[in-house]
Length: 114
Length: 117
Image (cartoon, rainbow over all chains, first blue to last red; front, side):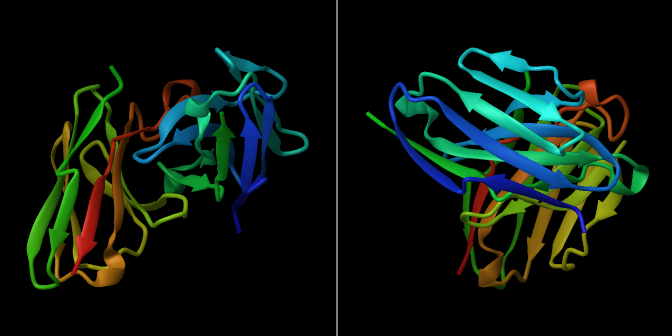
């Protein structure tokens, strides 16, 4: 069975801290791994990763994929209270029968305290 | 512009009511999706429309009926729902149902919060 596991499930840090969120996966027909940030509404897209070892960066956020060890990390440096959210990792699958399927992890709830 | 628009944002309906959720995108995306998300759980796929045709139904009960009138619109018709169907319903779209991953990010709308009483 395809599965995506995130850790930790929840995390409390103070502003300015650096955090690392983990996502491991076991799926057949891997196509890509996506990170989303979800506050009180819909998930907003952060990154899509398809190749190992290539870091994607957007401001204070960065992410990298290891297709050999089947995991990805999402780093947030100099955290701010506005980073408080649920961070979802999802894996997209290849194949016509898997069209549009995203296998989501449970999410990591990040709380950044002032 | 990566906007997927959903209406209504909030809906309260009785178990005998018939209502619809609507979703619209003007990005020229050819794949559209309905997801259901319960509190503190990740989104779960319900339906996929590929080039306006239903391509995946994840064994969703028939009280949920999707419709894709054209390439920009996706509806979810609701009838005889149960209280356990209360959830956030997310619409999403992507440029292609399949194809190059680098062009196929799935974008979500803000969701419709549904409460069944």
